[in-house]
Structures are given as C-alpha cells and as structure tokens.
Image 1 (cartoon, rainbow, N blue to C red):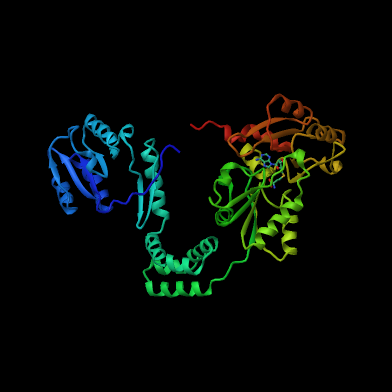
Image 2: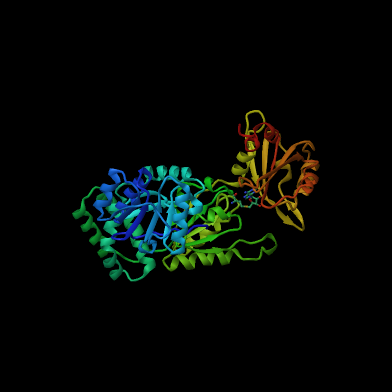
Length: 462
Ligand code: SAH
C-alpha cells in the first residue's frame, strides 16, 4: 500500500488555497462542504471564489506566494495556481513545516491526494489511485454512485444515534456486529431511506427488545475453480457475512481476499502426501464453531458436491442438529473446459460426459475401464499427474484409439492457466516436457479437437 487513506475533520480548521482562479475555486467548493475556513493567497481572485472565502469567514490575502509566507499557520494547503513551478515551491515550503499539502494535478508534489468521492454523508467513500489513474478512480466512483443508495447516509446517521444504546444492551462485540448486520438486512433500512423516522425508531426498539443470541450455522460454499469472478452472488454474500472461514488448498488467494476481512480464517487443506489429515477433524471443527453460535463458511474449490466430500461434512452437521446450506460452485470441469475452449459435449463429437476421479490402489488407478471406452463420450479426470500415464495406457489396452485427443489443463481459469494437448499415446510424455503445476484436470475425447479453434483465452484482442 503506497498511500494511507485517512478521513480528515476540517470543521473550523484554517486551510490555505494558493491561487485565485477556477482550479482553486473547485477545491474551495470541496473544502467548504467539509466546513473548513478558507484563506486564499493570490495576486488576484475570481469573484465566485472570493464569495466562498467570505462565506467561511476566511481571508483573501492579495499577494504573490513567497517562501516567507507563514505556512505553519495552516492545517492544510492546496497549491492551485496555473504555474507548476509555484505549486512545486509551495510544496517544498509546506514540507519544511510539516503541513499537509496537495499540488493540483502534480502527484510528485503532493503529500496528500484528493480522492474521487462518493458523498453519502456522514458516510463518505473515497477512491484513490496514488496519482496513477484519476480516470479509473472516477469511473469507479460513477459505478458506486449508481449502486449505493442515496439513503445510506441517513442510515449511517440513524445508526450513530442508536450506537451507544445498542452497545449498552448487547455487550459482546461479535454479537453486536451480528445485530447490526441483521438490522441492515431488515425492512428497517427502507423506512430510514424514506424518512419514516418514527416507524424506524419503533422497529429499532423492537429489534433490541427481541434480540437473542443467534444460533450458529454452516454454509458449505463452492468457490469455483480459481477465477474470483466465477463465484456466485450467494457465495460472495455468505463469504462476507461468515464469522469463520474454513478453507481448502484449492481456494485461490484472490477469492480468500473477498471474504470478510475480520473473519477468522482457518486453513485445512492437505497436500497429497499428507492425506492422513483427517476429514473427521474438519467435521469436528465445523460442529464446534457452529455450536459456539458462529456462522461458519466452509469454502471449497469448485463445487462442494463434486469430489468435494461435501456430503460427509453435512451429514455430520445434520447429526449434530446444526443448520446448514449448500451453495453450488462452478466445478473444475466446467471452468477448465470453458477457459480452454473445449465444450464438454458437442452435437458432432460427444453426447455424454463423465466425471471421474481415480483412487490409486497399490500405485494403480482403479476405474471401470470397459465403461470408459465409448465413442461420443467425454471423460474428465479430476486428479493430479500421478497415474495419468497408466490411465492412458489402460484405456488403450481396453480398446480406445491411441490417437484419441487428450487435453491437460493446469491451474484452470487462473492467470497461470496452461493447456497441454496430445493423444492418449503421447500426452504423458508431452506433459513431462512442460513444467506443469497442480492442480491439473484431464479431458479425454474428440471434443478436445475444438480447442485449437475455440481457445478464446489465447486469441489476441484486436
Ligand atoms: N470440488 C472440486 C474438485 C475437488 S477434487 C470441483 O468441483 O472442482 C480436486 C481436483 O480438482 C484436482 O486434483 C484437480 O484435478 C481438479 N481441479 C480443481 N481446480 C482446478 C483448476 N483450477 N485447474 C485444474 N484442475 C482443477
């Protein structure tokens, strides 16, 4: 983080604008909104700006800037002249006096930057890009302007009025947070938005009277194959409301970053070599946290019900009488296939698709071989590279054509996705030529031929 966002209280604080033209006027309007007292230092001043200065009980100091000007007198300074050299000099003098300074449109001469603002006072959102892209910040502001209700400021104000009373009644901070979250999800919000103050007050009082310790529950959530944009809206909502996140190795870092920031995050992933980390332990953890009244998000790669042991986990919850819900995710087969341009079914090549995972028995995968050797069927193998060579050989032994196309997708849907294409006869050796990283998914079938044409991920954007 190259900049540190803060929210400055400027009511009654004397701030200086160097410059008396329209650039200074724009900044003055903002400072005025925040209640600052404005002094303007400039040889001449526009009438509009002078009016603002007078409105704040500030002074117009008619002079050119010099290094002797008493900068230390000011809480904050904005250099808004149309001369870069003067602005730079203002910056130097302010720095020497430890006064916060911004020089308009000149990031190297700024101690602070003025962000793009979404004003829902008392709620104020600021978006800053450290001077790299004001356009991007403004674009984001426009997006937020259209999605953040205008009444949200009223809601913040209303909450502020009740904060102390809620704190006095619900002592536990964790429970208090849940109280507010539930309140914001209730019809009270709308009442505040539409200014129905009396109704809202009554609802609030009722909510406080009725408040009781929430029951814990578990959300079994599919996080998809890697790309965070493949999360469902429901997954995201639950990830952001859970108190505890229990996640696997397959849950990518960017997805984890979308979880509630102050949720407790517990990693229970296991490397292949340490398969002994007991599923029982995870099940017990889910039960334990839920019994403490926590909302637990069990976050799993892909879809929790596809080779995800999701069933076992919720059986345990069911037995312990704990409430749960299941949120499907995009499974690796769908994600990898889409991002590699390999349709899993296709009128000309495959009318069925079969998802498989191979358990190794004495080093050999156990699969119903004769059922796998069909024309017009796509096979998707959910497993790592171990056993791939043997599976291909076995399929050939059981009658599959050695030139049947095979694609191996590594880290599908992530920026590091790699696709290796070959045939049953040569895919294993081709994979060895590349530095392939887990997780990997293998697709076997005629549909793989379409990859060459439909590989949209690698098509250069004109
Ligand atoms: N529940 C998960 C699958 C868990 S089994 C789902 O629905 O996707 C783990 C296997 O999934 C891995 O060994 C790998 O074969 C596959 N896999 C998961 N994510 C993947 C990805 N991003 N790229 C390639 N394969 C992946």
